[in-house]
Image 1 (cartoon, rainbow, N blue to C red):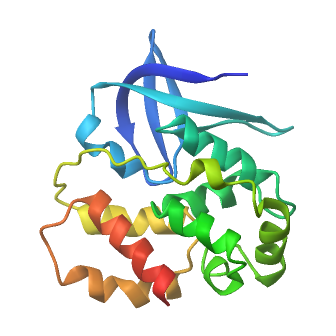
Image 2 (cartoon, rainbow, N blue to C red; image 1 turned 30 degrees about the vertical axis):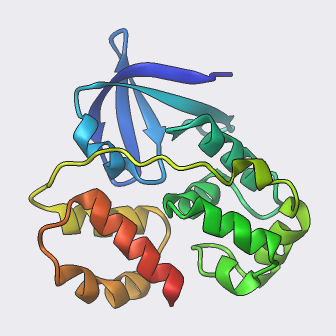
Length: 196
């Protein structure tokens, strides 16, 4: 198992980043890959979780150890796989997620992609009282403005599992501000998704 990797971010895609370490490029799935826009070709430390399946070996990345711990708690819930957990974590409001679990707010939890009522109830059952130490977790990285920032953010939403219909609902609101970076668009889109 891997604990972390230190290397340079060489590429950013809607669902993952590529980190080069000692001449090898590692594809690392990330909740919001565009949070690394300001770190392109710079050295970073990414905490990792490796998932080995019959048809794939996947790496999931996190900016902080607390983010990794939250991910591990989420995938321990029946019905939540690594991709769903990453989609849930893409919204930087981890304190809101933890509060929703602690307050048994199923309505809030079903707003995440791939989380239905049954899974939300299972999250509350399995995680209530087990997330308090993670409340202070937050990882906000600096960003730069990209020319196709809105398009990249919309692609990232698709990669997280949101439907075209859900994305169209927030696209018009996002398009009103053209000075945002991909990361800012994605954060705003996720906030809007959670309000609906």
